[in-house]
Amino acid sequence: MNKKKHLCALFDLDGVIVDTAKFHFLAWKKIAKNIGYELTHEDNEHLKGVSRQDSLNIILDLANVTIDLEVFNHYLLQKNNDYLLLIQSLSPNDILPGISEALTFLKERRIKIGLGSASRNAKIILQKLQLMDYFEVIIDGNIVIKGKPDPEVFLKGCSALNVPKDRCIVFEDAFAGILAAKEAGMTAVALGDKKFFSNADFCFSDFTQLNIKVLSNLF
Ligand code: BG6
Ligand code: MG
Image (cartoon, rainbow, N blue to C red; front, side):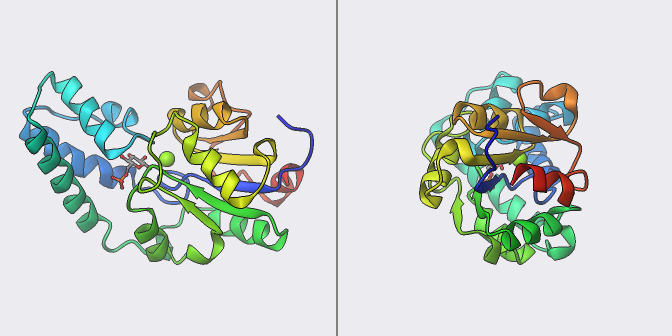
């Protein structure tokens, strides 16, 4: 990790700012059922941070099923329609604990804030959470070509914010996301269980542990 203070914070969305994994799971479970596979919570762990398309490929692999491109695209559409219905009532009450305090702290310190998410629904979700104003830059699934663990999403974020990559911190809850951050040459902070994130620079169970004192050491 860089000993100099960091100048920018890149946040993953799903699982860091808001718990949408449960909704992705429900929507994928329905698709999996259609193809004759019972998707488990354990399977769902492998879908975190992974693009919509790659997620469907993983499910097809698990089910050992191949389908036509047309059906593939139909499932992608159906999954997203179901997902959009499930997230319809998201509100600021769904912002995960500690996030609002951290964003306020960073804003006051004039630290640049960006979003680095695989989701194509990132803007809709930030709007529902009323957090759009905090983010100077939003790099989402509509912009990136190569999904996490490729570093593209975070490299695009730091270049849009005009900050050297070794002065950026990434906050991530997915193994693929931590890999992407390290590959990008950034400080990687994992949110979740330490035993899954030996590759991260730091690990905290959630943002309530990343209090002002901890953040002051990083920024
Ligand atoms: C990631 C989620 O943030 O976005 C994945 O962790 C999801 O589970 C991916 O597949 C793509 O999201 P969306 O909203 O474009 O289907
Ligand atoms: Mg995530």
